[in-house]
Amino acid sequence: MPFDSTQSPVAPQGTSRLWTAGATAGVAVGVMIFAAAAEPAAAIWLVPGAVLVALSAWVLNRPRVEAAAVVEPGLLDASAVSAPAGLLESVFEAVDDPMLIIAGDEADDLAGRRVVLANRAARDLFRIPATGALFLSALRDPRMLEAVDEALFGEIAQKVDYAPGGAKDRRWRASTGPLGAADDSRLALLVLRDETDARRMEMMRVDFLANASHELRTPLASLSGFIETLKGHAKDDPVARDRFLDIMAVQADRMGRLVADLLSLSRIELNEHIPPSGRVRVERAASDVVDAVSVLLREREVSIRVQGGDDGREVVGERDEIVQVIQNLIDNAVKYSPAGGEVDLTLRAGLTGDEAGGSRWDGASRLSLVTPDHDAAARYVSVTVRDHGPGMAREHLPRLTERFYRVEGQKSGDRQGTGLGLAIVKHIVNRHGGGLMVESVKGEGAAFTAWFPAAGASRQSAVVEEPAL
Image (tube, rainbow, N blue to C red; front, side, top):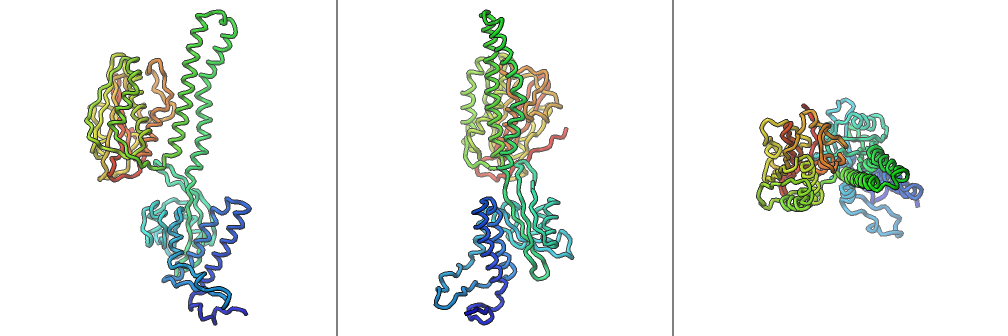
């Protein structure tokens, strides 16, 4: 028997649009399943679409009415197909991708666009309430604003790339689409999908190939030349053979360290946007590093002086990465210290951001390489490593954290570095929401200070500061 919704006793009056959206959502889910069978990647974008089609009807019909089950009498119990109250809102809230429903009126300017509804992921990303926020205050990217306007007033769906910038350098793929009209406003949907990991993996492969091919060319050429010489007139010369083999061993060791540092840097950059969650005692980490470099200290005839008591203060971070920061800074200080010199390692706790990054060396050129977001409640634990070597001129400071950058004219001993140590330090500090500062006086040495947020203190993401000399 044909079913007439206007005659049915189980169809509440005024719910026709909700029923239409529900049917549309059902069709969308069916299309999603079909598309997933043919092309699994297509389902990624269809899942949010199916949910939001039904959600738009919920927004249009607020206050929400309860869904009614419409079945042929005697075929199915209505209670078996009725959805639990609040299911649609729960699904919207649980989706991991940031989703926003935006309302706008053609008579208003951009400042009149408002967020009708934002799920948990969107609220966390843009730091806005669930409803009523000004869209322009949450997102100011011109291409994104244009795409939303096209969806609102042009009924055009688009996909655009969104890069908010900042130290974390996150990359998003934004999908916009029209949702019709409600009262005097039009509605649009904005869905963001995080593509940071995929982009970082792509850049990691490109950078690794480019950097490795450039930096490995010289040691490989040296090895090839020595091998040819050993196979030729030097094969019967034991003195030359031993000397060439020693040089080859040094070059092979440098290549091994270079590849290891490149892989370490790529791995850190890949996870830089993911905040750490562990707890680390900086004093113990520093003590372990001092023990580990004791052999290098004896070889270079350099001593290390540790200042700062163990107050038991923990920082938020990953122990291996914080150890790597301290070790890279100490390695640099030892390499640029003269024989018989001394390296100062100073630990301080309970500092504000200004105190942690404040100057402690009168007359030194100083530059902040990584600066955390301003947070008056945040407290930090700092590690300062100072050498008494040749120091650096002011013009070199902004480039110290560049890959493979070396200050010309400086001698770093027999064991040359790879030029990646400070780049690794910068990215680790940035991931931890801390800061990094360098101070130097030409002819008197250099000091590097890294600071990390103390456990339990307020913490925000760090921002790489553009050097301005």
